[in-house]
Image (cartoon, rainbow, N blue to C red):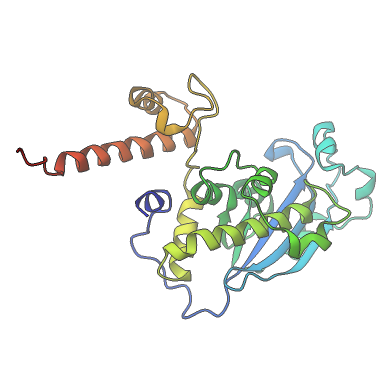
Length: 273
């Protein structure tokens, strides 16, 4: 329980977002884009599905292609999602398409910063990637399809909607992410006093940098953070321009080690005989 507390810390005063809710509905959303830098990019497909985290029900699938207003799809993006420029002819413009997904109080996405920056929909946003790092730290990898495989996730109740599609199409990824969020809630909500506390803690985690399980670069690339020497973590924190996720992870783990050392010092010595 202590380890889980460290991974999914309490907020100081969870907001009273609702009284005795009968449902907790989140709109899980995914976008596919033309594959350029943010300032030059264009959304070309949006998909979403709603999930009630209290009952587990997944419902109201929505999807649309989007006119990119002359922005061409990059070859790399086209290889990933397999959407062609020709397929977008006659699609609604971005504002019209976006309006069909607006109005939800809570959104979630696998890499929420990406989808949120493109859609600019107001509301509370949850990041399933960051939450999955807390809920399933032992999983081999935390990309969406890796989580489907290694958690593993049961896609039975969305299988009919997935049929005929493939990963990196917007609705396909939204459906998989909804199952992931439902599984995250099953894992983490029992550690909370109620649904409001879960939501507050999940929002806090989603707003912070990612708490990595392994570094993705450098001398200890691929090593479990617990096995990385403290002097390397201290160096990493001091190094200018370092990746924010890596710095956040280093600070967190140094804090854990400090608390463990203080706890060991406070334990009474065994009696001498």
